[in-house]
Image 1: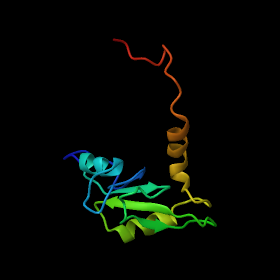
Image 2: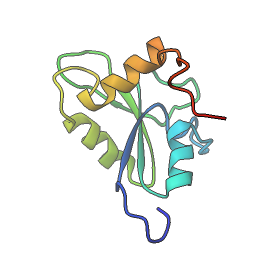
Image 3: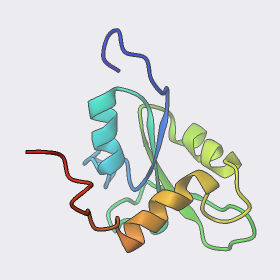
Image 4: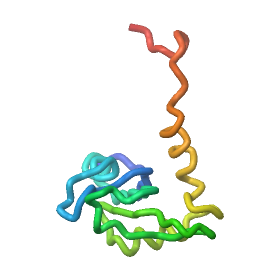
Length: 116
């Protein structure tokens, strides 16, 4: 976090923190580098090279989520994801992000645009 600026102490992202055991950053890893706070990446499928991702089973689902992290221990991140609110596989806090990623944002209208 930048000096003199307060903000969140943890970010949870619908995506990967890193894409392989060597630390190649994913979306959450880039957020960690930018904001300097711990970032947990939660993915619905294991990225092919993310062999280090921690599988987390939630609710009654047999399919795990895959947790990667930047800035904190992976076991702690997996435990936090396991305990996040929601009865289903995907935590409630990530559902809107997942939906937007699937259907996309609504097209901008002329009233949404900033003046040139």
